[in-house]
Amino acid sequence: MKLAVLSRADCRRLAIVNTEAATAAVVPEDLVPAGPDPLVTALATAGCWASLTALAADPASLAGLEVVSLESARVCAPVRRPGKIICLASNYQAHMDEAGITRAGHDPWFFMKPGSSVIGPSERIVVPYPGAPVDWEVELCAVIGKHCRQAEPARALDYVAGLTAGNDISLRQLDSMRPSDT
Image 1 (tube, one colour):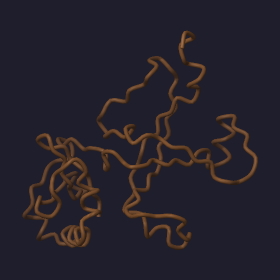
Image 2 (image 1 turned 45 degrees about the vertical axis):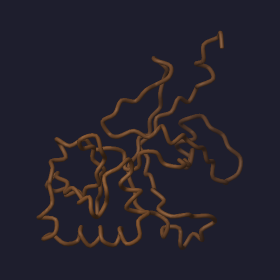
Image 3 (image 1 turned 90 degrees about the vertical axis):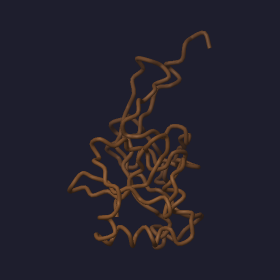
Image 4 (image 1 turned 135 degrees about the horizontal axis):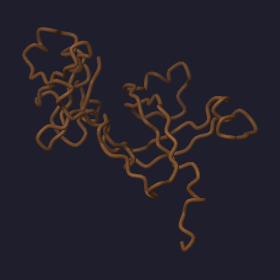
């Protein structure tokens, strides 16, 4: 099942995507209400995820829904304001070599980003220091759907609600770009 969050008339709606037709069937509000974070609502509402999965699996049910072209729709970030964004940095040697990073040991290197840094695919990226060199990377993002702490590796995917692509934009040399009078 592929989902998208669409901006429709000043609200956000969950939709089931048909990639072959480049369309999305808007999920009825009685199943997932419109709101600031319909995907989070779907994950948090008892029985909703099962109903959504059943709807997506039944072509006859989808035929009765409003269908919109993805080209004409405004697709939003899947989660508007996530509670946490935890990133894994320099997770392979070639990337560390390219960036000139030397690191001892093999422990993962994590960093966090603010939830406010999440934007949708058509939104403008704001760089706080215009003209500053930015670095970008396409990332695989896991959306965690339920509380998870010290999960056994064999059960880790039990906590993943879905996957999405992300464009990680970073100012790698932030300290050297600050104005000298600050």
